[in-house]
Image (cartoon, rainbow, N blue to C red; front, side, top):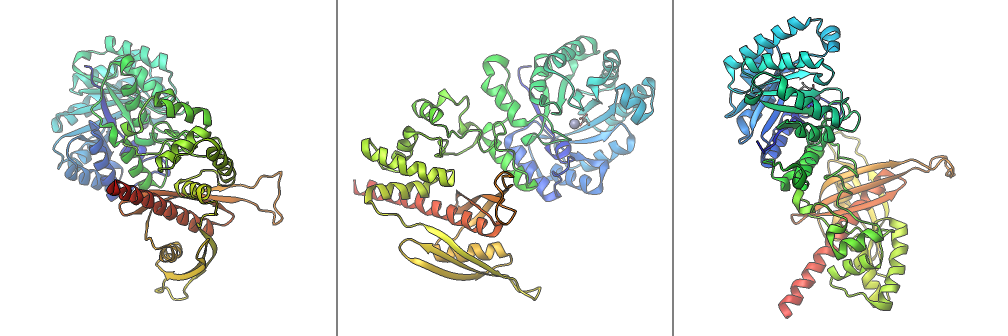
Length: 526
Ligand code: KIV
Ligand code: ZN
């Protein structure tokens, strides 16, 4: 078989990790994102673990079409029966029965002999087959199980009718070479191995979950269990986006396909980040904010000549619409000229040199030079006049005494041409009130789409006079007219920092919309 089945466990193994628990409606939303991604199996939960989990599996079974919907069960009748009820509405369903097989699990956790474990597998798989056509068996802690016993346990499960045999690296202990060898061994040692699909389920404790899953494939596994953004117990599971893109990008090497629509990866990753309030780290492969961003001058020059110099995948392959050239303090003249050209300004010779010097000053001060700041810089270069931009000068929140009244924000902005402007607004939250006041003054209403805050501790070698000196960095996206725009700010205090990031995002929206409108006018005039 040249197709790899993608078994997604974001909603089960992922959800059971600290910090990633999800409400039933959020789980349903995530399951729909997974169906759009076209994973083969969605493990929707562990029905016997709680009534809420059982209900959530049932909601997904009733409301999500396409993938097989699966529920986890221990090797007991009550657990399997809980899965039967929870999965009843599903058009395509699977039960996933597991029991520990390693000496540690048998002796310390289960207090069962080898024979007792084999008997539990025999009776639970037979019982599961009475209720399901599609049964998966997992030998928990398979990697630390004696090979002969593992082969025996999997053979019993296959003989009783399990059609998928999962070999989990429950504690993230194996290595790529070892797991390839193990799957090759199992292919020869498990009875009826031609009638079953071997599956891999790797944890990332040593940072090798993706490498180990791919190595398992080399050994004959044909199902990968994985989770979006790599979430899961402890260090997480194999990241879905990493294995899918590795198989796709290195098709020349693996020669294997998945059914996943990779252009839905970014949407699934964002949905999960939004639901769990846990965005992946900036440098996370495939879905991290930096995964397709180039800031250094040498890289930007290469990418501008030919993207393939520093990019092995296209952002659009994962559904990412991005300006991959990030203008920052490491950017060079080529990148500045290219971004200016995209805004309709040709920068050459002395004008480029002058603008580049001004650009570096701004970049050193604010880190990333976004579209609004770049447009202002370019306008300054051609008019020789400082450009007017909105800046926060004061924000003051009055919190109500009565529980029913809303906070009121009084915000003062400074604008190069209009001078100081003040407005007030109220909203159910103090931040929303401040954003509303800003929108009234800037003339653009925006909906905050995401807000990420980082606490940047003070440098112990440079003590501030007040003994603190820490900063916050806020990165925000807002939606204006159906489009998403980004903004950022750095400040000592959280409230002014959020308001400044909002001003930056709305300024970017206005600058980009003004450029688009000018382009349309030019085209109409031509
Ligand atoms: O890591 C593990 O062993 C598991 C099993 C329940 C499949 O998550
Ligand atoms: Zn697991």
